[in-house]
Image 1: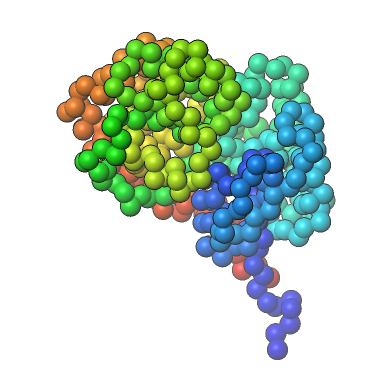
Image 2: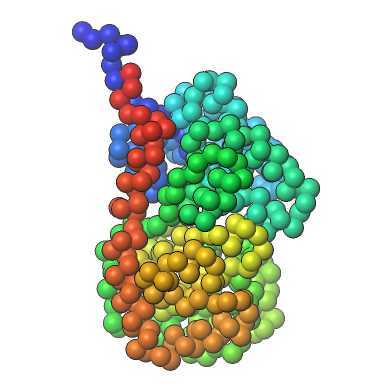
Length: 380
């Protein structure tokens, strides 16, 4: 009988986030790919008072409960709870997603002699919520300087961010784009499900997403509705804005939607929105998953003329790009897509062609090659 020493060991990867696991499409895709490749995978996040029951996945899920739900005390409590969890739980590799989970992952991996991987979903210290708060920014910059240069393995969502992070921290960053699974609904129904065309925004209702401008633009857009799928820091103020402008019949708030429901909704839209204010390097060099989600669903979208979107547009011609963010320019772009039928159909067909390349089935090959280096399989 073979000894325990000679048995092949299945490496355990623990991925850590601060959000509710139910709605994190990106981490569900990543963890599913790793689990199917032969890793034992845990995804650890937070438990909110209104959290839904977790859907069964091919990986293990764990949510940590906190007394505080936002602000400095939340981050302090969550990081402490996560650190204690990682100390008590065996792992081979911990994947810390963004700066708000990297400190416990880095410290626990050092204490245990294990590997810490940094997954930079964004340039954390350059998001608007951090940029406008100098004291908060200094804290997170210290965390970044203390941890990231000491790591060997890191990846991010786009080439622009990879270059910035490599220059800033002196370690290589692989690029694993946040693209969706290939859709089985690439041909949209020719018979509209809704009476009026839908202008869809999916994602967090947070600062710097151009949502106030989009709601204001609806005052002069007729024959269409703006649907906002998500919640965030601006949820209340956006609802107030819609009421004050008497736009309740034009602007719908859908709240948080599970991934399966969102994937079913997106192909029903006529136009997608991915509007960002240039309030920091993270947004300027972003490559948001919603842009790829619209492409995969065959939905032409309006994006900002930031470097990554310009590069995709030059290759696939699937967007309308705005040089600056304003209600007037949003309105003009929406009207163009609604009125110029031939141009719209060309963009839509371009989306369907680009979707054959810009999908997770192809991108996961890069992810798995990365992890075969960071956390080799079959090591006894």
